Length: 266
Image 1 (cartoon, helix red, strand yellow):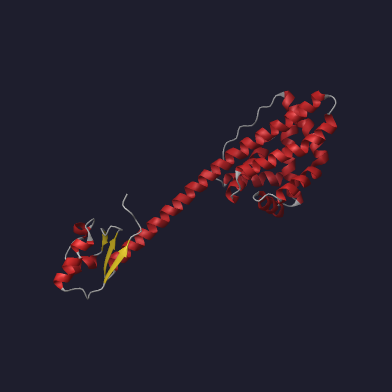
Image 2: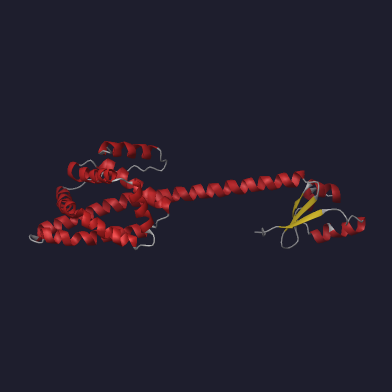
């Protein structure tokens, strides 16, 4: 049976395996904020399935979020969902915020890696408040003080959620950008290394020129064929340096491979 202890162990393992895990300060809530949170939670627990169903309907029509939500549902069992809910319950009633905050961090990482825009997630959070408000009004409409307290509790929780998920989301996005940039750089270096190996080992004379006809590459076979070193040819115009010599020496029948580079001078 999947328990809250299993959930905490799972969170610890995931956070330890994640280089971008952020240190999240535990929120310092005032007594009235804590009371408001508990007033909110009491009503939420009574209408949780109804609110969840409304959010699912909205998500099913959202072009970005429906895939994320469907994937989350398919991966989590009912016991795992209850364990996640228990993390939130313990944070509100017992002040055990750290496991819940870790769970929020992982949500932010998951959304970033899945390609979900942060704006889409904010839409879901705003919808949660909209669906929650009528139930709070029904429960605490009179006196108004308790209704206001519960609404403030919702806002306090949303602020915590947005702050933690937002920081985690942005940090993960930055890490993904750095990883992608490093992958592109490695791929470019590998391509350049392969090109250099081909140029060096080819028995054919290979000359690479740019769009203006200036020489960019001049391999050893080209050096042997035309009598110029690579240093003497780089940047020179092929039409002036190579073609006249080819005609003069009568070597036009040799295999000379000429590439037009896609690179432009900067």
